[in-house]
Amino acid sequence: MATAASSGGVSDHQYVSVKLESSRLAALDLAPHLFGSHPAAGSWDPTKALPMERAAAAIWELSCVLPSRHETLDFKLLLKPKADSSECIVEEGPNRPLGCGSNQVEMTDAVFKLTEKDSLECKVWVETEMLSPFDLAASWKAHQENLQPSRVRGTYDVVMNTETEARDEV
Image 1 (cartoon, rainbow, N blue to C red):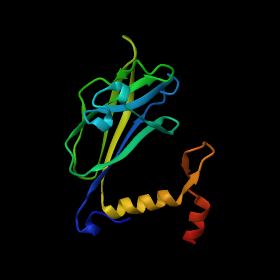
Image 2: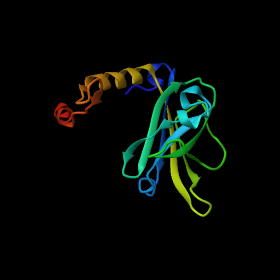
Image 3: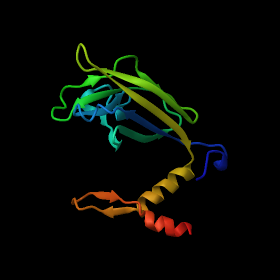
Image 4: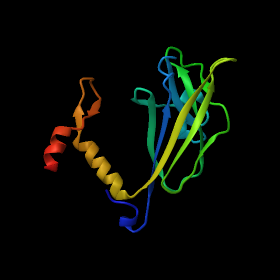
C-alpha cells in the first residue's frame, strides 16, 4: 500500500482504531461504546455513544478515519446493558485524548466500577496511522469489489473471498 512518504509526505487522513479486551464482558451482558467531545462521538451524550463491534471472543473494536489536522478529540469508553441501554457505566479516570500526529499504538487499562465492591478492568489499545489519499482509494476499491447484496433487504455485506485472493497470489 502507498504510504505518506510515497505521496510526497502528505497525509490527509488519520486511521484510528480503538480496541477493548475483556474476557468477563460478554458474560456480564454489557456492550462497550465510545463517546467524546466531538459531535461524531456524541458530544459527551451517552445516548449518542458509538457502539463497538465484536472483533473476537473477548475483543471489541471501533475504527474510523479522521482528517489528519483535527482538533484534539477527548473520549471515554462506557458500558451499556444490552437489555436496557438507558443506564450506562462510564470508565473511571481522566478523558482519553486523541490528537493528530504520527503512527502510534497506545496500550492502557480502563476500569469500570460495576458495583461498590466489583470493578471490571479491561485492556485498551488506541492505534493511529497516517493515511495517504492512495491508501484510502485502495481501501475503498477493495471494499467496493467485495460488496455483495445481503439477505436483509436494503443492506449490503462485504465478503472477502480468500479463495480468489489465494489464486491471484499464485
